[in-house]
Image (cartoon, rainbow, N blue to C red; front, side):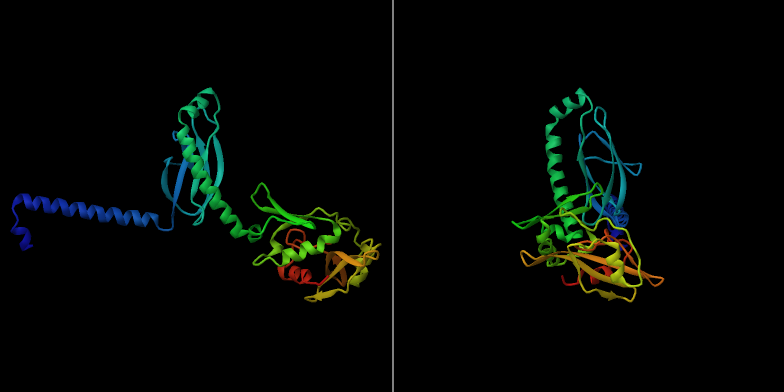
Length: 303
């Protein structure tokens, strides 16, 4: 206080103004920091830059940065002479983009694109970064994609995406090489095959059947399926009320065993019932409502 008393009026005014500026700065910093807690910095960029962007009915600035809480947002992008866009966008700690380009709806929109090409070129670059990040996220969620595609003279394993963005794995091979392809997938590190939808181009000979429950699981299998030309392996009881076995083919001409289809049954009222059609590998998609540990036990059966 004595220091302030020793200042002249101009010095005191400058001191108080400086103090006020510092206090305002501190308050602004605290308010900004508090407002950003639990949020991530998001890049917002839609071409044309004159487009308006609303997230959950709240307008945000285009061609800018904003802070948002992770979650799914309903985005609406509009601009005169361009086709409006409505889409759901999921923001997370790994994905922090709201980006895209709009299509011209008329000649004026096309003229705008021609006269503002740089906006679209810049945005395409940002979209590339976003797609790259999205690819990293998807491969983190679905590790098998890090290994695909796999191609050789015996089989190929590839993937495509559903409309919901989930991968569908396709195994293309002749029946006699199906087991080899399955073993390859089982050896992929950090891959849980049960979470995927896996399609096989080899025709499943047991896709359609008429179940005939029996007190014996082996009899249920034999009576429910046409096993002509196929053999039934020794089965295995799993957790008391499940039973797994494989149906396979033996080629006498080539002395070759192949095409193992895993069949899983469940016991109910002293009768054994088939859970789903036999598959080269059981997953949560083709063997629904079955505990994963049961599926894994069935898949571990040696051909």
